[in-house]
Amino acid sequence: MREEESVAGAVLETVIPHHFCISVSNRDAAIAWWSAMFGFEKEFTFEIAHIKARGAFIRKGAMRIEVFEIEGSAPTPDERLRPNTDLKSQGVKHFCFAVDDVQAALEKLHAAGVRIAGVARGKGTAMREEQNPVLANGMTPASAFFLTDPWGSLIEILDSSDFPA
Image (cartoon, helix red, strand yellow):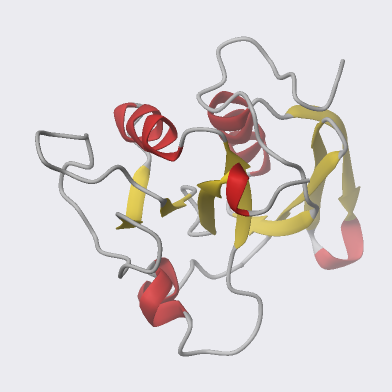
């Protein structure tokens, strides 16, 4: 399987891979969500008894995500769920996938029920929340957007032509 290929039926079929780790409340639900939305496949699962953790590595092409479910972990605070307020605290902010058609990706993920945290319509424009991000008459297509997974991880989607390989 080439890096650009994915599991049939994935909402976003073409992403440029990077590696990151996320903390979730349910490892198996996280594996299922990432598989359904972006086409990741489970490589293997593991447990770390002394920290009461269940983990997994999931993979799409060369990109891997390490998923951790740790007993007693806290949900993501509200200010971390929005790209503009998340920047007010230090540390890792988000990870990003590049796609060929940002507006199409936005509409597919919105239709799949994913929480869209902000949309930029035109390079250099402000990231704003939108009730319905579907392109309508007179709207500028999205140039980038943020979404969250069900556990509060911020994910940016941008145009692959902005950062050619």
